[in-house]
Image (cartoon, rainbow, N blue to C red; front, top):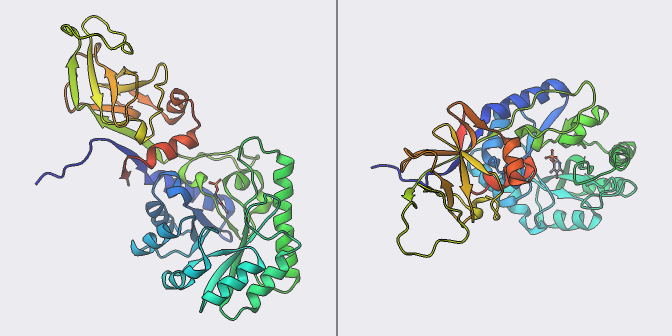
Length: 372
Ligand SMILES: *Cc1c(COP(=O)(O)O)cnc(C)c1O
């Protein structure tokens, strides 16, 4: 029997992720572990696939934001050490133990709650370098680390900070201050005689801008899938985007040359010999709700115009200039077709969003096809 599927999908190139992880490994050197952050379904690239790719590439661990997804990764056979960001409750300790997942603790209250629910649980301490989210402030960190070390049921597996570097117009002076505060907190913990096996403060932007903050591990997310950030001299590299395609097929073609006696749709400027096609992709799949001016797709290796309005799961394309187009023909929003190509940067301009937003919008809403 034929396998029936919606004819719309995106393409994730796992060889790009392998390239990025190898580049990163060379850059930080063999003494620095890489904990790949796969929160947000790895920005739409698929958390389990990215974690598995990281495992095969020799990563030190993976970090998840969502307990359900981390458990799904375990069920799918991911064996890497897994760190959970502070997004789950202490009464899940037995499940975390059963799945070998490490939660994040920040406060003495956290330590009390988690130790009372746990039997034998490895945990991470988060450090707050001034971002004021989760984490222990530097002058509290030694006491929280001490409480973990003294607990009969908890074991300190590591500590990490997440200086804000890429959320809107963040002042580099503020980023530097956070990096320094996190490193200072680690020094205070070690000065108190507490061993911290894994020490990391570097997400993607920090890796590229603060080589001195590699410590003994780094935790990039977006860099692993090819989203780059400003790099200091010595840290410039070629990163490859993992999101390389968004493709669909015409499910209907129709002539609007002779519309009989219906009233013409006011939103659709008609042309002589007009022909339209429908593509099963729409705003509920991430396409902008307001059709961007000059939005195009590729059909038969040529540019066709998209016609508004965007529907929930459908878009119109203007086929007037490609009259031979037929049901089943491939329509490309992102990627190559024939001699033409629409790249991520161009698509981001068409949609008036950042490349980061494209990842989330596309990868989370349509089927992913992995190129290995
Ligand atoms: C999100 C996150 C990361 C990864 O951030 P990128 O900017 O995608 O590299 C790393 N560490 C922590 C604690 C995070 O929350």
